[in-house]
Each structure stands twice: as C-alpha cells, then as structure tokens.
Image (cartoon, rainbow, N blue to C red; front, top):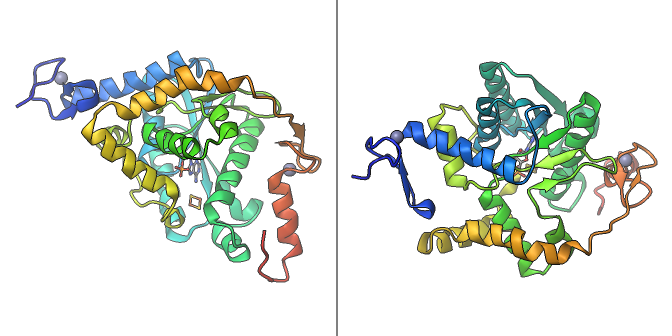
Length: 306
Ligand code: AMP
Ligand code: FES
Ligand code: ZN
Ligand code: ZN
C-alpha cells in the first residue's frame, strides 16, 4: 500500500506522471498549488484583479472557481445559457447552487434573449452547432466582462483540452492557431485578458479534485459534442500517456517553451471595432453581428447554408 508523500497516511491517489502518492487532504492542497503555479508562472492575474470565471456547470470550471476561491482570489462566475433543453437547465441550476454555496455572484446570460438558442440556430444552418456556439460563448464572455468591469476571464480548459487542440493544430500545421495557443491571451484591442489556470492539470486530476471537494457538477457532455475530433485526439493522447506517463505535460510545455516562440514573430493581426456592436473584429462587421443579420434575413423559416 502506497503512503502519502506528505504525511505518511495511506495514500489514496497516485499520480504516475509526478511519481507522487497523496492522501485526500494533501491531494486537494497539491491541486490548488498546481493552479497557483500556473497563475504565477504565466503571470495570469493577482489578488487585486476582479476575475470572471466562465462556468459551464461541469467539473473543470466549477473546480477552478472553487480553487480560486480557496486560494483567496476575487472571482465571480458567468454562466451562458445556450438553451439546450434539460442539459442547459440542469447546468444553470448546478452553477447557481455552487455560487450560493461559496457565497459568490453568478451572472447569467441567455443566448435566447441575446440572439437565438443553439437548437434553433442548428435548425437554421448546416454547419456543426459547436463551432458557432464557441464563437458565441467567446463573444458574450468578452462583452459581459467588459460591461461588468472584470479585468480577467478565466476558463476551465485543462491539460487534456490543450493537448487535444495542440495535436489538431500540429496535424494540419495550423500556424495561425498555434501562435495563439498560450494559457494567457493578453487584453487589448477590445479584448479582456483570457486565462486558463487549469493548463497544468489533467482531466482526471480535475475530476478527482471536484469529486473530493464535494462539488455537485453536471456529468453529461453537451449533446452536440458527440463526434467532435477533439474527443478522438484525447483518446489517442490518453493511450500514449498510459504507456509513458508525463507525455502530455511535456508535449504542451515544450511546445510553449521551445516551439511557439519561433512562430510568435509572425503575429500581426489587425483588429477594428465592429461597425454594429463595437466588439473587436478583423473585418468591418463582426461574425456575431453578421450571424444576427443572416438570422433576421432567414426569419421566414427557410433553411440557409451559412
Ligand atoms: P468547452 O468548450 O465546453 O470544453 O468549455 C471550455 C470552457 O469554456 C469551460 O471550462 C468553461 O470555462 C467555459 N464554458 C463552457 N460552456 C460555458 C457556458 N455555457 N457558460 C460559461 N462558460 C462556459
Ligand atoms: Fe455549444 Fe455544445 S454546442 S457546448
Ligand atoms: Zn497526506
Ligand atoms: Zn458586432
């Protein structure tokens, strides 16, 4: 039986990539110190910042909010209700219950009131719901943070998420996306700073943290996420990780340290305020306002190809 490396109690959690065995108390402490390490080494934010945590109701984002709260950061939550039936209702309920439990504010934005819910949007177009949904979530996160005066937006992307995106971008040598893959996207040009404080912890570690902290989170994935390529990349990475613990962390951190700086010189995208809503865009009108215009045009109910 392995014993906790900190207190010699019977260890219940073994972390092969760190060759570390920890009891429950020391695991929770270790996880929070990993989050703190990411915040400090990538200079994400300080105790003075007002942070808006984007929460989906799942283990990662609620776990992140919990860890930030425990570490003494000023962090409120933002839930974007996508209008995906029971899935969205349950997620909102759990996010609200969690906010009450830690005594923090949860802001809720309803896509239906601002543009259109995801199922209706899916009916009207042939593109996969997830790509438009991602754009809308990013848009309303930025808009809400600015409106309410938050200086940082934190999301619950973990190491597995980052590795899956990195793998996809490497497989097609998508340099523009590789340049942007970093746990901090600086503020400026109308964007609020965006950070990923869970980038050093795996999905399994994050699930364990949420579970051991007694967080009541939504276990179901979004019903539209089925079949996303990131899921198969995650499975492939998990197989490699199992055979060679530490691969994911090395793949990600060595990219950040050695490879990304070689591409970073190429970064010079010009942004202007959208002529309709004022949010940053590379064109004259941003993609969300263009989407709104097309939705207006197709109100007659015709299925359009956009
Ligand atoms: P996903 O793209 O679903 O893997 O989610 C990545 C991150 O985006 C989560 O960890 C959250 O921080 C954030 N997020 C996802 N869905 C929502 C939502 N409905 N409302 C607010 N934030 C969200
Ligand atoms: Fe947006 Fe699934 S379509 S989370
Ligand atoms: Zn211990
Ligand atoms: Zn716009």
